[in-house]
Amino acid sequence: MDQAEAIYTVIIGVGALIGVMAPIIKLNTNIVRLTTLLENVASDNARQDDRLDKHSKVLDDHEKRIGKLEK
Image 1 (cartoon, rainbow, N blue to C red):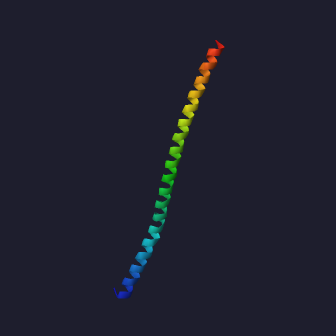
Image 2: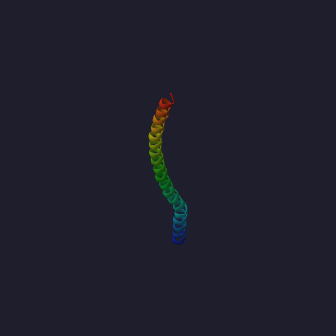
Image 3: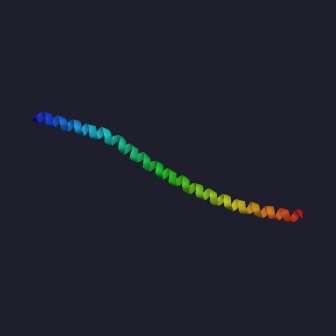
């Protein structure tokens, strides 16, 4: 193999490596974004659950008070 073939092989190898690595890097970036969004959704869901629990307690208290008034 002469010098030109070696250089050609290296250029093709680097091109192939870039062709494979670019989509992998984009995929990794998107996975990180989705993970962050999912964590935000989970924390928002937990906060909504807490709010619903508080409202449920208030409604239960109202039901008890209405029940006492109806007796």
